[in-house]
Length: 364
Image 1: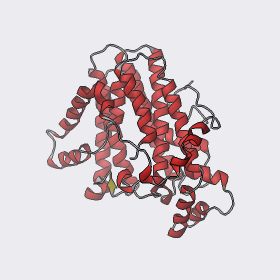
Image 2: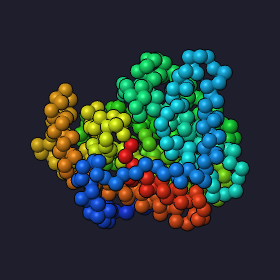
Image 3: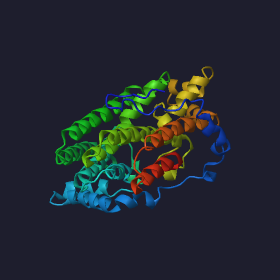
């Protein structure tokens, strides 16, 4: 597995254990992965994760909602719609938690946390528009309710607003990293778009795509919090690598949930990514192991055939690739934890560790 997967990905990241060694996790949990979805021991994100930064997160929330003030009624309505979400605010929490390892007043980290969340929201607005999605987390999307033109313009507005927040940090390193992240996010989406219904995608291509789409923002969230706190470079490096590994695991679990999640919890039908021709880790593994008479290939050759889609989803769900995909996510979780090993044992450290546990057990 490649450790450097994008222009902004961490270099020298803590090595990920080999796939073979990670089988310890998969084998130990094999029976759980083939139990009915409802029987799994999945957890939500504990409130204790936010405790070290709860006051800062509340200030970030108020700052975000202040964007609705002094706006035209239409723009205020749009902003209120996207800011009033059920999101867990994981990314801004990471920024604030990673700023706790060096004395600072927290103000610049809070500004950056707001920027990180706005960037995430902007990408969701654009993603929903490109994907023609009607619902996001049980809520009607902007493009569905107000049209694609309004959604694109709102996404642009939120993107630009996030950039002004980053400029307020007055830190050139952070500003540059944030700009690189926007490039990576766009690159990931473009790659996903041109690669739809291409069953010949490699694991390396997949890793690069999910770094760009997801892990890049986790990396930026963690690195920027540390940088703005004035932490030593060794601490910045450790937290950047932590964010990278956590983000990779987060997206792999998201891809697993596309096959085995509860539609009410994940906010989309089971097999939704596959139905749109998107190759995720379980699908890639299944192709690697079943080159002949593969229902996934049959579906990609004829995307209008709903029966082929059902067969492909069922075949992947019942195969060992689900277990082994979890094992790959666990590799990244092990790497994330390893990068925390040398940090001070403060409450924020416990929260960052708990986030790793949450990622691999989450259900939405």
